[in-house]
Image (cartoon, rainbow, N blue to C red; front, side, top):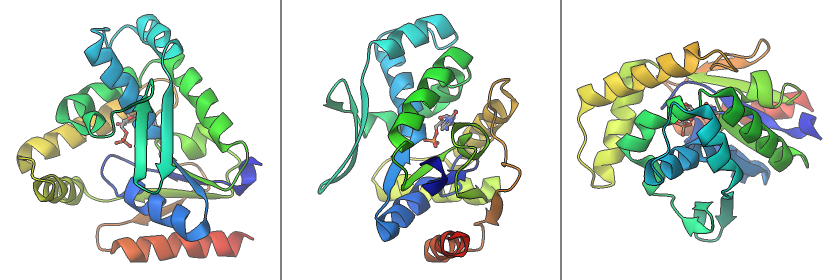
Length: 222
Ligand code: C5P
């Protein structure tokens, strides 16, 4: 039942996945990271030398791979043909290529089909760009998370440094702005706030405050 799902959309780095994960845990819902699915295809394209501008070739590649989102004791993992590529899909290179991969209608139609299947039983939290507008237009709760580019870049910067990666804040700002632009201007299912989505600006809120706000929305809706 699609109506028992929660849609969380917004631009890159607004905190969607962090918040969606915790909301799902608190409600014992299933968390579905749709961005990880597009990232996995982008990673597969890069390793198989498939042109990210070629929608037909990407669709053919997608038809031949399995993408699994695993949620077990050891945490969340993303599997490409059974191989754990959870770390590999978070590189700057994949982040740069993924909006191009995700811009093709052929790719999106297939991804959306897979996402709807994953969500078909209900009690899921999906995060992405087009969940409220396109994947699950009947979702019970729709949230649109935003924050300024400066804050989003700064959060990503700190996250990378904490994990021991090098990071250039100005470079990140440019990358994030570029990614938002491609995601917002593509012809098919662009990044948009759904008409009845509740917009939450996370700039000045803690993770807990955002989670609580969403849980309140869920409780209000029953
Ligand atoms: O959420 P995340 O930053 O991992 O998403 C990576 C990219 O995947 C986005 O920038 C966008 O190009 C694409 N995406 C999408 N539709 C979704 C989720 C992600 O186009 N529902």
